[in-house]
Length: 131
Image (spheres, rainbow, N blue to C red):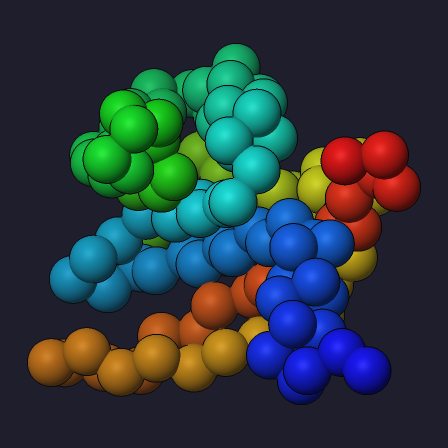
């Protein structure tokens, strides 16, 4: 019989996770996190090619040097009248891109920092059976 922790580990190892957040407040921008580094880079490159003036405000790295989170900003992201895509619009664009690539939305998570509550949207993708 398999112990509970082993079953949970096997289940967690079977999925990749992607997390998205848009913010138009003090920490304005579009945030992208993922356990799948290749998919994160693909979405990041799509965003840079799609969003005018898109810049990396911050990129966080794992001890291996791989980037696991991007914080993207651009002019007009908080102002719908500017003609630039808003951060919220781009969040939904990113989610649609991921769903088209086989990612499945699994829910939203609320997080609290010093000033406000943030909503994170999470997606998962099942690993291929041979991995």
